[in-house]
Image (cartoon, rainbow, N blue to C red; front, side, top):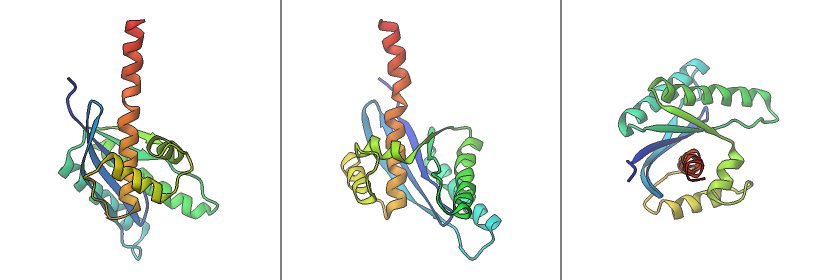
Length: 171
């Protein structure tokens, strides 16, 4: 029997960073919590990043995850927006790493494919499938739903190396 693993999924954004915490025990997933860390868009970039840092640090303190997963950045047409998203993503990577957690990264299309079955699913489809996979999930918006989808993706992907090792031992 495997011990329960708490996974924190993070959907980085400078205005809103979604987070979702799940528990993975074998093949069973259960919802722990979700929400959004926001920053004041009238503040300086440094102030906004500090707000995101503090908010994510509080989430880690509250939910005590064992592992974290963060969505990778996709490149926008607007270079300035991509750079700002990169800053927020750096905070999303830094906070769990500083807490000693292993941090995995997943491309947006990989998350969509893992949760919905199609790499180009829309937000509505992601929300619906998160609700199917985590029936007790309570999330307020797309950012939290996306973060839960990232956590679900990691729960599925983290088993792949273990399964490969077992197959190698058996073969």
